[in-house]
Structures are given as structure tokens and as C-alpha cells.
Image 1 (spheres, rainbow, N blue to C red):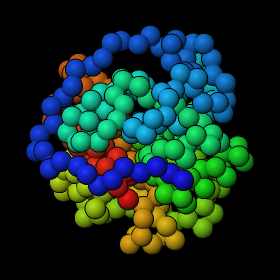
Image 2 (image 1 turned 45 degrees about the vertical axis):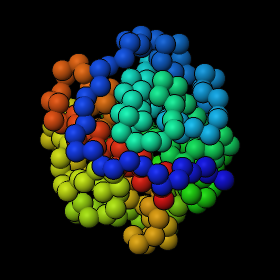
Image 3 (image 1 turned 90 degrees about the vertical axis):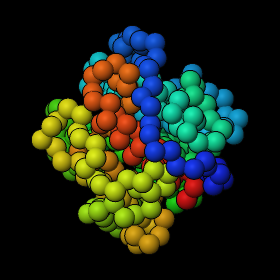
Length: 266
């Protein structure tokens, strides 16, 4: 059973302060970096489960050489995010310790929210498919981010992602938001526009948000949110370094916090 956190959050704060970036991490130390990556295995350095909320990054098999796509923006992205998430809410959570879990790992069921990035490269085994389906059906929520329209060597990122998700839910139908009226855009901060965060690097990509609901019914629980043509975690990773405008970074935090709050309260 997916563990959830009660609806006990402080009042909405109108301003997000950009956090300073943490210590620099050498790329070769990252999972999937210069030391290689073993497909379908969870990271051995994961934090011990103790009931506190943990940022869970999903890993997947990657045979494309140096730098696994699922590790982009790790670990600074989630660590910076968790600093603000815990500072602005009263959610008891790990800040420095995060976890990396494979899709077939039963440990996934302990956590209410799973984060997947660079889905254009994503491939799943049959056990991955079965486990992810059960996780989402039992109340899990997945956030898909770092999602350019075209991934190098892949082409159509959405097409590749949709193929994998159709294995999980063959009858699933993605529904694109045309406005910001859904509760996920108001679960903590008031986000009134879908275009408040520009795409970090592919400036021609118009940010889009698509969701998969139980029984394809938008009035029921959302199981997956896809930040298509978005890369929220790019702003999180580089916050405090002056790489991006503070205003854009603040909005990226707001959208992300809303999505995580929605995931742990629905």
C-alpha cells in the first residue's frame, strides 16, 4: 500500500526564495555516470525508510554510454527542491537524503510520489510494467519532467513515452490541460497560467501539461502528470547560481511544489 501524508500544510506563501546550490557533485559519481549503470537496479545508497517523505527518482535501463538520462539534475535538483518544500510546508521529510528506485522494485510502494525525468529514453521490462501499474492503481502518483519535444537520438519524446505508458494502461487516454483550473495548480500556490515557466533550454518548446486519470475520468484521481516540453528540475538544480532568472526559477518551484503536494494529499 502506498504511504500517504495527511493534509496538514501551512498557509500558502506568496514568495519563493531561491536556495543556494549545494556542493558540486562530480559527474562520474552520479548513478549512470562514468562508472556505468546496471539496468533495472535501485541505488544501494538510498535513505532508510522511516516514514518521512522522500524524494524518489525513478531509474531505468540505459545502454547509451556515459550519463544515464534518468539522472539528469541529480542530486542538486531534488536537494534544492526539498529545502524549499520542507521550509514552506510542515511535511516531515528528508532533505539531503533522496532515493533512486527501479520500476520493478517493491520498495516503490512505500512512497506516495515518484519522479521520472527524460522519458523519451525510457524503456521498461515486463516486471517494470506490472509493478508500475499496481503502484498507480493503489494510489501512487508519478510526476514526469525534463521532457523536451525531441530527445537526442530518439526524435519524438512524447511518442516514445506514450508507447511505454500504453503498456501500463492500454486503454489510457492522455488529457491535456487548456487552462490552470484543475486543483493540481492550486494545491499550495495559486498558479493561474500554464505558461509561467519557460522551457529551460529548448526555447521554441511551449510548456504543456497532460494527465492520466483513473478510468480516463478527469473528475477522478490523477495518476500521472506529464510536464511536457518542460524541465522544472533544471531550474531547481541551478537555483542560486545565476544561470536562470530568479522569477522563472521561483515559478518552477511553485509548479513543482503544487504537484508534490497534490501527490501526497490525493
